[in-house]
Length: 131
Image (cartoon, rainbow, N blue to C red; front, side, top):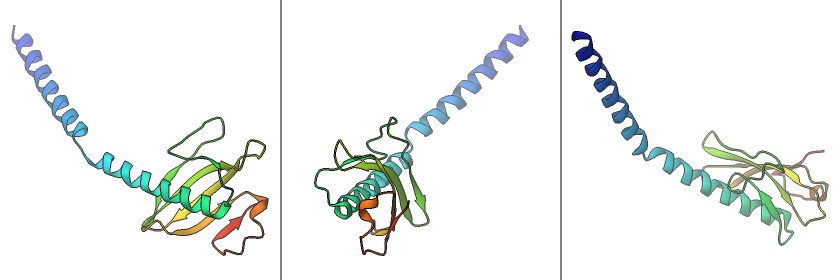
């Protein structure tokens, strides 16, 4: 009889702890705020990429529009700024070009690394064309 009471008290205590921790995890606003910051960084990276490539209607695969058939995409903090990776394609006949955009805290372009021979003649020193 004494073991039943002990097990009940133990199970009830563990249940309360799990319920409390679950409530704290669900109501924590930090992941939502982080997601909004990430979305803003990806949107800024898209604008910079579209401006530099200047191909009109390009298709972009990035963390907000992933396509695992094309490749994996990432967004992560880099100091005070962000690094966003992805792929773009000018049209259906073009191959997918991988890129890495580095942004500062204000979402200004610091560097763009890209594998696209069409951008070799670009005079912007922030653009690095990889082989």
